[in-house]
Length: 408
Image: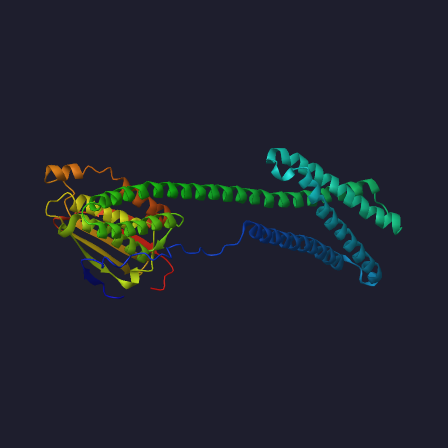
């Protein structure tokens, strides 16, 4: 890891922080919903063909094994004809189950509850079995004119075969609707997750909209104080404010931005504040090069620095020094890597020392609270923002953002 470097004071006023090109970056290309749906449909069709061919193939193999085990070796020719009949009967069952699917879909059975579906499944299974058995017996004894087994009741054999076929068809239908029930549950779960994601995005945009006017108001106050005192520096301040507005508008469409872009905007903000506070405000930077490309929420660092200036510098007659540090913590054990940001300003988390400090310290905490909520929305519970009374006589805003899949 690169050793953090300390940079005193400030960037040159003639160097602008954000180039005109702006900060908007193209998002990764993502597959459309139609393409995803088409892939899922093809996968479902392949699974259906595999289950149909595999299931009926296993049933046909069992029939062959049964004939082979109990057949008379001297009647091989009759057994061969029986194999052909079994193939035809199995193909008939496969076709019946295949073409009943669009019928059930047209009748809306896939969307029914189990209480409404069970009697329909039983009736459909009995009907399919009747058609199946009727075709098998009609072809065998009607078309091929096979002799009826002696000492056997045609009605009894037909009834027993019909019952066995009904059990098979009902089992097939149950398996079919079990699959579609789970698919429907997965679809509902996906819709719920999509709604939650939309809600989180809406919350995130709402939180951003609360942060942006806050820093804009303070920047305009700084500019107002410069107009009558120093016109050239006021023009420079307008340019820096324009940079900040451009960044705010463009980054508002992004969930995260590189930390380096945040540093540039904070440099602009602090340049405005230093013109206002003059020697009362000094800044010390301790930024690791490894931290610069890492992703952070837009306006996060600016919110921390603005809070530090307002409640750590403006409220103190003598002003003070801000220390802004950032470094990358490499992964250790079960802990992922993390970007560690600290903004330290003079102050006390306890009671204010003076009346002016008390008035300045009457913050509602909206900025920091919103920053904390944005971190949790984007990075989960592993992202932390907290205020620490350290070192002695100072207040530190400490941020830890988990970083995954980084080459650092």
